[in-house]
Amino acid sequence: MENLQTNSVRAIKPILTIIACCFVLNGTAQKTIDTIATKGGSYDIPIKIQLPKKSIEKSPIFFFVHGGGWNGGTQKEVPPATISGDANFLVNELGIIYVGLAYRCKGNNATFADAINDLESSVKWFLDNANRFNADTTRIGFGGASAGSTLSAVMAQKYPNCMVYIGSEGMYDLVDHDEKESPFPSTEARKIYGLDTTEKSKMASAFYNLKENPPASLLLHGKEDRLCHYTQSIKFAKKIKKSGGKAKVMLYDEINHTCLSAAYPDVFKKSVLEIATLFISEFKIKNKNIETIQTALDKQLENQYPTKDITESKIIGSWKFNNEDLVFKPNGKGEQKNNNSVKEFNYIIENDSIKIITEKQKERLFFLRKNNSSMFELITDNKENKYRRLNYIKQ
Image 1 (cartoon, rainbow, N blue to C red):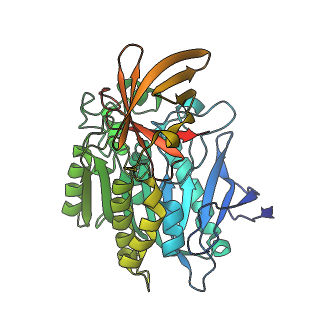
Image 2: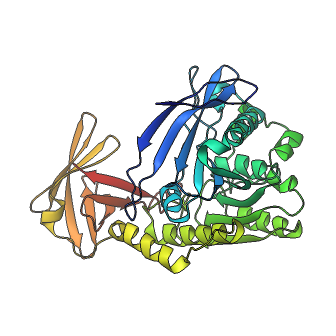
Image 3: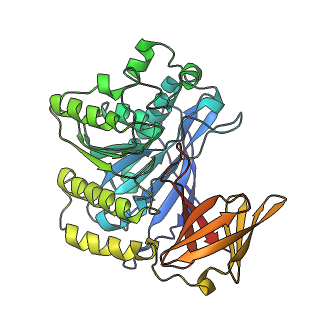
């Protein structure tokens, strides 16, 4: 445990929980700090700080805002601060400080404006305490995923020292918005979250609030995104360039609503290398070589790719995803256990895939990863979730 004194007007005395990070490259240990940054109404607003190994030079700061459709939260607490799937790797390889921000959501009876206030207060707390983390407040960036992209894109325009913005599967214009193409945010969600008028939606859209010479931006999007249509990223990039900034859009075929998950190693690799390139350039990080970073990333991801060497002996046993257990038995037989229900199925191994055939003759397609300890189901017959991967862990 460690205490931090804060200069915040709220005079909060946070308690830090220090956790050893389980993601280690080149023998470099990281530190994760979970604490309370501020108050939002009656709620504690947490913050998650991922620190690199100690360095003589101060580190640039990247603030990340989680998604989730602005859902979650209870009468007692807000959704936790989280970091993106690329955080550990980038902290280790580039020496940046990665900060996950939290905010009040619909379950806290909050509004978009409340969320922005929470984010601003948390950023202030961190910047006020920057010396304790050896952080360089002249080099900051923002990013977010899904609903977090809407918030983080607005935040990125508020800080003169914001040099980069990373948006993943983002929604940047809440006014020119076709709910059939982009179900998020729904009319009901807008109403609950205080965005029920055009004026309020405009204030919550970075598209209409870009500062002059906005930060260099990288926008990642799947072309099969069923929540936030990829044209949002294309349109936002054009507006950034028109306002004097640099912007690049990375579009991915057969990718739904995720671009920064190692469950999709090819997409993850391309995204992370683009992010690393942008950080090195805009944060002016010295002595970093993108080829070396790619080699380290390849090593980290090698077991995430599907194997082409599937045998029955490798899949025999129980595999779990949420409340579902799939039990593979010899001779192409198996059981699907879900809560108190048990159903039999047949399966066929076909080169690089496993096809499950249920009692109702429905087919489900699975791929075994090279680590032999996880497999994923590729969704192909559900429009909303098409191309998503559900990760099953061997028990």
